[in-house]
Image (cartoon, rainbow, N blue to C red; front, side):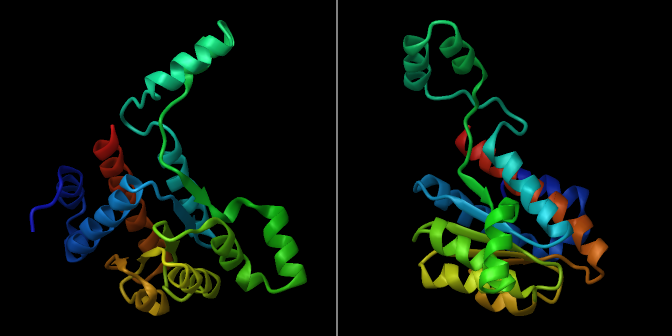
Length: 211
């Protein structure tokens, strides 16, 4: 299989990831098609994987390695509305990919956890935010994080794509995914060390596709 440049370079830097090269390329295509068709990406995880979810959305919502100028028509409207501040906004704002980090909504997750069940908080957000054609991206080193799997199941019921990022076993999440990237490690910190270059490559690929 001929991989895009971003994935070729990833595998050159991290040869251990060759075992999941097809999965990474498949994840890239799933995400690309979602964005191309106007969909959004919902991301979540726990602990270090929650930090990864935040990291991913940060790379998608703004410029990563390339300039992402906003639509010229929008820039012109901003300048027309306010000569000074509109011009500053038109120059400073950057194009982005719609992505929501489900781990960041403290009031919602604590309220839902207290009133209903903390393991269903990501599923609740997936229910409300998600639509058919979107992608749910769950990160769990074991593949068995219950709250992530509940959200993945909810995403499937809504007609969303499901992408997993796990350790080598894949766990329950793997059975719910359209694509599951199972990096070749099992110890939590080792899995997380391989997750970062994978999602960086995916973010680079999306940026190259749309800018």
